[in-house]
Image (cartoon, rainbow, N blue to C red):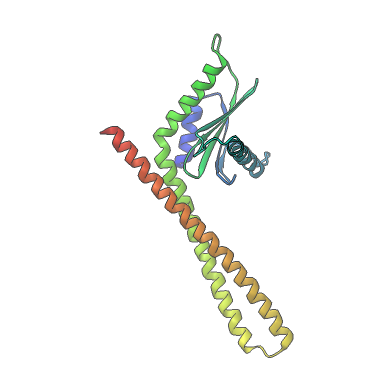
Length: 217
C-alpha cells in the first residue's frame, strides 16, 4: 500500500464522515481519488482547480494579496467539501456526508473536520511530497525514453531523406521529419517542466524537514 493510500485510510478511519477523497495537482490533474470511474474524474479535477483559480482572480479584482491558499470550505445542508493545500503543486479535496451531532454547532463541526484532517496531513506531508516527487521522477524517465526513441527515429528519417531520389517520396519523408521534430520539441518542453517541478518538490521537502527539526529542537 502506497503512502497516499495509507494517508487516505487514516483520514477515513479518523473521519468516518468522509465519503470521498480527491488528490489533484494545481492544473486539475487527479493523481488519486476514491471516486469510481462512473464519475468524470478528469472533469472533476478540472472544476475544483477552476474554483481555486476563480477565488484567486477574485482576490486580484479586490486588490487583496494572495500568496497562496490554505483551505477552501463549501458547506451545504447535506455535504461539505473541504479543499486543503497539500504540497506546492498538489491539493486534497475531502467530501463529507453531514452527520451533525446533537447540540453541535455547524461551524464547530466543520472546524473539527478541518483540524483533524490537517493534523493527519501534517504527520504525512513530507512522505506524501516524497511520493509525489517519485511519481514525477518516473514520469521524467518515461519522457526521456520517449525523447530518445523520437530522436533515433528522426535520425533514421534524415538518413533516409539523404538516400531518397524520388521527389514525391522525398517530400513525404521531409514532412515526417518535421512532424517528429515537433514531437521532440514538445517532449523536450515536458521534460524541462518536469525537471522544474521535481526541483520545486525537493525544495519543499527541505523546507518541511527544516520546519520539523526546528519544532523538535
